[in-house]
Amino acid sequence: MSSKNYTRTRWDVQASDIARKTHNPIRSIVENIVIEPNPNKNMIALSIGDPTTFGNLKTAKEVIDAVQESVASQLYNGYAPSTGYQEAREAVAEYSSNEFVKVDPNDVILCSGCSCALDLCITALARPGQNILIPRPGFSIYRTLAEGLGITVRSYNLRPDSGWKIDLDDLESKIDETTAAIVINNPSNPCGSVFDRDHLLDILDIAARYYVPIIADEIYEHMVFPGRTFWSLASLSKEVPILSCSGLTKRFLVPGWRMGWITIHDRQNILDREVRKGLLSLSQRIIGSNTIVQGALPAILSKTPQKFYDDVIHTLYTQSKLAYKCIIKVPGLKPIMPDGAMYMMVYIDLGCFPEFKTELEFVQCLLMEESVFCLPGQCFDYPSYMRMVITVPEDMLQEACLRINDFCERHHCKTSHEIIRNSLRRVEIPY
Ligand SMILES: *Cc1c(COP(=O)(O)O)cnc(C)c1O
Image (cartoon, rainbow, N blue to C red; front, side):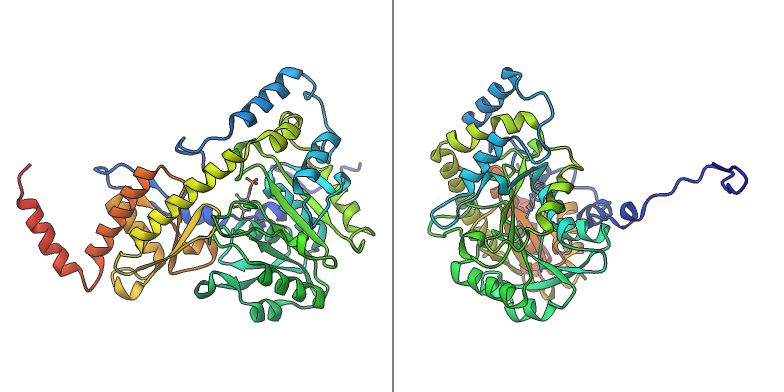
């Protein structure tokens, strides 16, 4: 190594392009909110997409037992193969198979959460300069992952007036020669929508006509309310290559355990030449996922009783109805009843609230006055809406809805005079 041409004369350590280009829009929007909640009211955060935050939703005893046994066995302290232990992959293959689709253990890659599964899929399919199509409104991780890698994202619209179905013409119009994949999130965060079978077939038809593979973010699989059916994309296509991403996080209420997976669905062996190998190589970057949870996976996926799943769904459904029934009566707001997952989107008719220029100002003022915080639609690339998390304890959800109602009555251009009169009357009552 020659020292002659060496030009560094001081410390100047720079961040890589990937580091610089990686942004989480939720973080940057939320961190810019400097508003303090109202000190006289306890804080109710309807913003946190972690169902374990308040302790009212707990994973099943069988799941805890499985992990305890895994730890105690001392069999899972070492490195696993980078795609995961055979038994763990077999368990996921079994869990993901049904009468329409059979998953082979060799088609399973265990990952560190579903986010990591999405990361591997996007990285394996798209090159810098190419684009992937993502839903709007949608979860921000797709953009965060892709843009860091120099992959462009193009949003296709969901339609709030038709149960958040994809605007198929819009989707089709966004595809071009450089489209590497379509990301489909079903059931949806933030919408709580669940696509029916016909709609999924329409989506698959577009993917097939343009020869574009699909990345299916199905982390909320099976989390659908009574009367609705979850169809995995892979169960409906014999042609389109589908990388399906899921995990324990949401359905089993253990986001911190970081256990997710990819199941590769490729009945025409289209991905065999390169992409499958690419996924395997990329999995070596993470040296496999958490082995303790891998050791527990066969028991978790086979022994968790149906009652646990049913109880979680029951809670989510009951609370969604509660929130919907309350918010539908609030002047200036229009909730959209979810069919699954853990969220409800609420339209804010800003025309009724002239004080607020954007939904961001609305949620900030709601935080300041009522100590209730919902994520502004901007976080999901969808202004004029806010997202409510419906996993908080029932009494908190009820209280939050009442406060949202008070807030909107107070600020609504038509009702505010009346309400001020009422509240003046209220303070006259001594207590
Ligand atoms: C929560 C969530 C994920 C990430 O799940 P992890 O397993 O915690 O990485 C992925 N996609 C969507 C739509 C989510 O809501």
